[in-house]
Image (cartoon, rainbow, N blue to C red; front, side, top):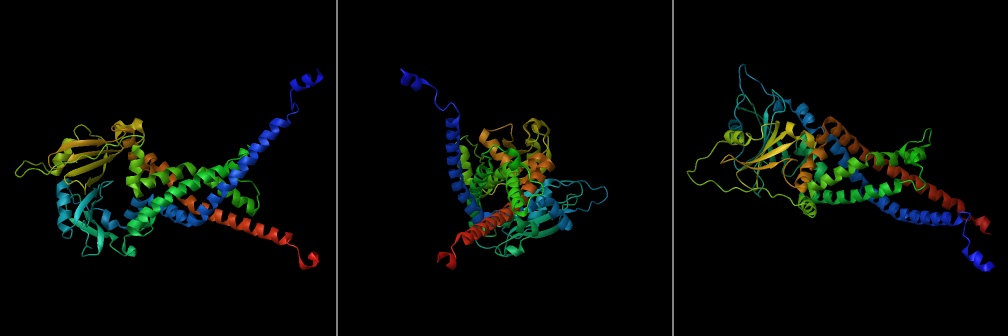
Length: 421
């Protein structure tokens, strides 16, 4: 009878059982953290320098346009004659094409972002053989009031990265490490590993003891070892969300086919429309008329750039920012895909049209450049880029500190000749 009563009595009523369970769970988590620490460590040591370089160049490129205008006033600043009126886009494009070397194709027009600024038309050399001028990308500036060519430069050189223009050099360094097409794929692959590194960093940052203040702040009057540790984990945590967004959007640019395939697993993507060449003697409209017809239903927004498809001849993409009717969607940019020969609007690309996958793809450039949230977004992206070399430097210092500490401990515990006797 007594034994039955003892069997039915509550066991571990003093709380030791639950404490033991929590201790075992904590021990398992700490064991897993050792694995994640190794992953985080070796990714950081192996790729951290590249992350620092990509982040630093990205921080500069946030202000690429402003820097380019400042460095090249002759290319961008227009002289406006008294009483002059803006020339039609077709006249601007014709002037630029006449000034371009034979065989080059216009890829797009950067619209003036203020009065008194030139149009800048981009040209590329489409043939597989090297162009005679050893350049693969040219910019030609055209005065918007006189349609006269006022400047020209090599944006990308064919083989010498140090002959790119300043902004072109930073773009190539940022997304290809100056390694041409192979570098584009390499940086894309590294972006995947950077995502893994960032997520393992979050696991290591997470306080198993629930002391959130310790991991969210820098300890006051901390020594150099503790300060470096706190700086690494707080900088990593506060930059994590923006950094992950930048890494994902970087995949969109460096591995576009793989990125689109992955997005299509969740939501279909609307294919780009195609157009057929106009029949001989068929009536055609000029570029400005085609643009005006397409804008009838979508008049809002500030012109940002016009692009001509290199894959589908006859397609013309006109993109606008600050579109008033897109205010509720946060992303307020719109692109109109137009048949430039017939003047037909073929597709509207904005957050109000298309599938979820289409909208997700449209977000990638505004997120990567920070433009989606105006100056606030650009500053956040710039600070996140600057955080990358900081994370690499503090992580490297932390690794060296732990190596020295482990070496000192080994020296203290190693038996000397006299004590071994």
